[in-house]
Image (tube, rainbow over all chains, first blue to last red; front, side):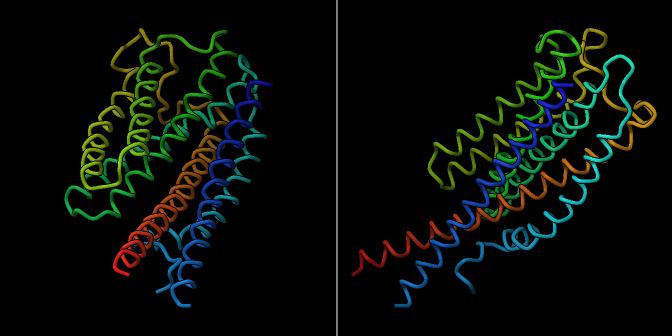
Length: 42
Length: 240
């Protein structure tokens, strides 16, 4: 039982961590591009 | 065109696909979780065998990632369009994640079933080789300069690396009875009540792959646009 639970916990945690890193990167890049556009306009 | 939109048509398509793919993934993952929890316990292994529902699908997702790496590389060599190089890099990264999950979950199952996490079995050795190959690909990409030379080398490497997939899949057949790894799944080879949860687990894992790949491709496009903007603004500063 504990082996299977450990396995599913590792898989879920890994996928969530990677997805979180990608979502953070996307948000950071969007913010940087928006800031740059605003700087160019002003 | 909005500055926060990704770089190419492929990346804009990926950006549009992220939300619907995520919603479908949530629904299918919930269904898969329910079906796997309700799947009957094995007479010999108990619930240990349920690791199969993530272990084998992770391998299929990794295969898909590495095939797309080769396809992206081939399209880059053919069309000389950077979006295909970025697709290859993204597919390799996401494929490597699933290959890592496969290579981590296998020994956990083996520790329970065989009493030891690793044996020098042909399937296990070729899987480790596959993992090292794409880890090297990812490291190569992260350490080398972004440019046509590195992209061309990565494309050739990605196309050559995909040859390991059939070797990995058919390793058990090629080495005959010497393999300790369970045989490849075939139609009807899953026990009663196991095929449904397995297919649901496979669907959830492949959808997780698609969602993560779409997200990674979008991020790759945004990064390329940010880099291009940085170079342009540096150029303007130099002129000023």
